[in-house]
Length: 118
Image (cartoon, rainbow, N blue to C red; front, top):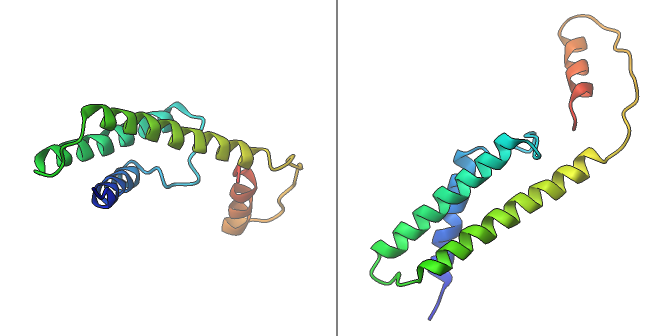
């Protein structure tokens, strides 16, 4: 039996829910509770969409345990990757004190850029 179509459908649903919950935003602080909550919601809704699709289709006779394991693995892998990625981003180096001399929009833009964790 080929599992290509279920894989494509599942990846589509997870990609859409991650986009809807703004999880592709690389400027989001990853160790925050809001990000963990959004990750859990996106995995839950992606899994729920996959689960309901495979039970509505006549050829989608998969066990409930597979869907639960899939959701747990997706949560662990997504959250783990985000945690490792944020650790790499925030450990890029020590910040150096800087004085911004300038007025107007350009000075504020430079200040915001330097204040950013990225």
